[in-house]
Image (cartoon, rainbow, N blue to C red; front, side):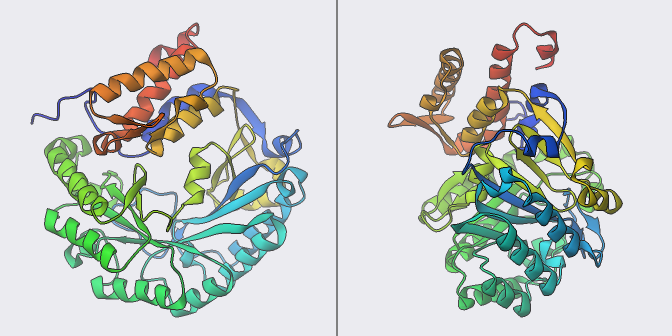
Length: 432
């Protein structure tokens, strides 16, 4: 079929796809303890990521770092111990964390007592700001009254719920438990308790979905007065249940590209005309209702403290990934020397900042201090402006709706340009 004619042949759907070039910025391995004992900037802002890599049911589309199993009995205690270990470093205690994010897997696969234990340990041992945003990812089916009450008592103030769609047909296709009415009832329960920053995930362009169903999802978001929603085109993971049914992902993309663009434009138009705005490439929010501090910190390239098996983060100039295997994670908790990461070079922060701005759909050339790199980005932005990917607003450039659609491609291209400039004398950039 004839795809849209522009500078990109195939749409990159994930920010992970747009980060491929960062591998050229890695210097080598470095232990986490060495990084934590090095010089640091006091009151450095950052975020905390807590990973719970367990699910009681695997969704048909899932490609996350998770295990189909109940959490081991000692998981919460291991997480608490890791938090205590971090608190022994001045680097950590002199930082300021204004965002905590529980992801997975499914964090609510843990019982209320274990979740409470972890939340209290974070508050007791780590330096949170008074206005700290604490997010819990959850499914509808595991959002029990008991957990809702516990979250309220422990100061959780933001939810990201994996609804994916309110369509009963779509929920069956995507392997979600419960029908539309159940999802609405659980969301209303959160609001009744007093939670105002409630967000959901929406997946579009799944098999047999209609545009009317996608628009109805957005109208339901509006009717429920939600703070915002993340929306993702279905990514075909050939190892996932749905991927095995659909088959070749490239063929699926080529057959469904126009549908994908139709869904994206329809969803965006419906949300924007009802008072929502883009916060980042996959996130639409009500202004001043959802600041999503966690993702802002990540895109700014600021510290992210990784807690839990399979958690990834960034500390100082070191990328860290905790082991997903429980036996290995237990050893990491026993001795922080067992955790090693990848040290990045001095150019990482610059490129991460620029790519992060693209992810946030807002590019500010004034933040690029180096004249040559600023000129490279400026010339690239001028090309994008001619092709209606960006528009100038005051002294910044905002991605248009078209630009947001192709945003991960733009991120990938801009990082390639900067790396070529920085390492133009090195042979290993010929791959870019």
